[in-house]
Image (cartoon, rainbow, N blue to C red; front, side):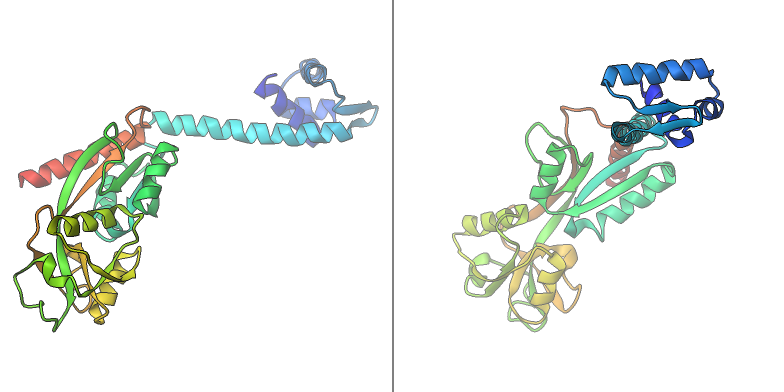
Length: 294
């Protein structure tokens, strides 16, 4: 069965007349009649009753028309998706990123990409690291900005390294320190992310290396919320340095190895990226290479 045949059957359904449908389609009436017979023979049903006044859709024919309409819509969408995938000047890029990057990394990249590729749409998804990994595997997103490489086989473009600091409220006993050891906050109420997030595993590793167990007070998925809780004196937290001072907090350098968060772009390497996504990735690589040289 041809997609064209289904389109013609839909025209017959709209016009309810063989001659009128043939005129609309610009094809001979005999050609249209053969196409209708071909579809009816293949499906084993009568789609229309032929009458002198025109055509009447049968009950089974109504089912066929509904399905034909759905198939035609999906086919046109497929044509559009393929065109998007092969044309780097148009199309769609699906980009996922961590919540903590929404106010810093993402706007800078999108502003530059809009300048070089104004015809490409970027669909943004802001989510947690474990959901980003799942969406990459399911091909729901093309690219992701995250703090961890999903697996050794994934593509990875390092973008920057964020220093992690201890967030304390202004006036805290450690606020005027230049460096602080994790052992010094073992008994402080500690605010951090839930255990299923990658950032939490980084924080836990820092405490494990120091031989210290934190005193958990609150957990939140949102770094801005964590900073806000610290600012009102509900505890202390470890966070990227960029969050220090967002409200009434101070960032103190950690006297601990590996107190950094690596930010990068990742993608699947076992499937080919759509050309618009390749274009965004390559632009990001070029932008950050230039920034390192300056």
